[in-house]
Image (cartoon, rainbow, N blue to C red; front, side, top):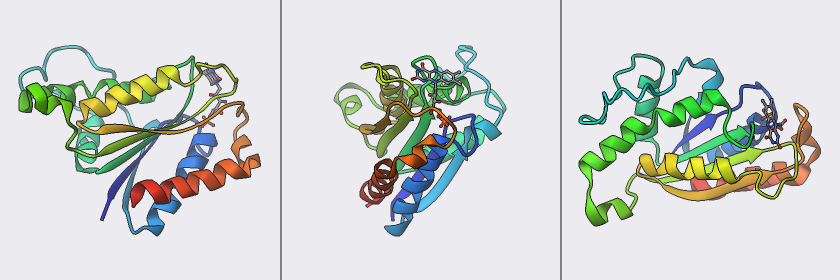
Length: 191
Ligand SMILES: Cc1cc2nc3c(=O)[nH]c(=O)nc-3n(C[C@H](O)[C@H](O)[C@H](O)COP(=O)(O)O)c2cc1C
């Protein structure tokens, strides 16, 4: 059974990315996947201090909500991160979670070397993102951040879903195709 972790990365409760991830999870549950969720806005996760505490151990020394998140990240076979575009990047609360994956990056390079670093043995990662405008490069920053987040987790980045011109809180609900696509996506990736 696939162990799926959904990371709700928007500070806006019940907003567009929440709605999409809810749908994806409904689809995934139809396949029998075991689903766990993280609501980043409800957690107190401080930014990486670049203290070097994890350099030789792969373990972060900051005692906050991230300590439980590390375990969830490690246990998952599939991770789906959802977030709106904020100034071409992730919302700062969610970026703090991503930056704290530096400890997992150190763990990875302590445990693996050479060619082994070219393979991903811990599963697959996806990103779902939404932005208000229609710029050609709207998701470039977020996608690169997601790719290297999953790299740190020893997971292969497998792409995702991206929706432009969505701004108001529940605007995505007017886009029936997007909602259907999210449900189908959940079914497909959890299988
Ligand atoms: C602080 C902030 C920064 C934003 N920056 C961008 C941006 O750079 N580009 C863009 O297209 N939309 C931007 N937006 C709009 C959101 O991405 C958009 O409203 C999105 O639908 C919100 O999704 P949510 O309901 O899941 O939070 C920004 C919104 C906020 C509040």
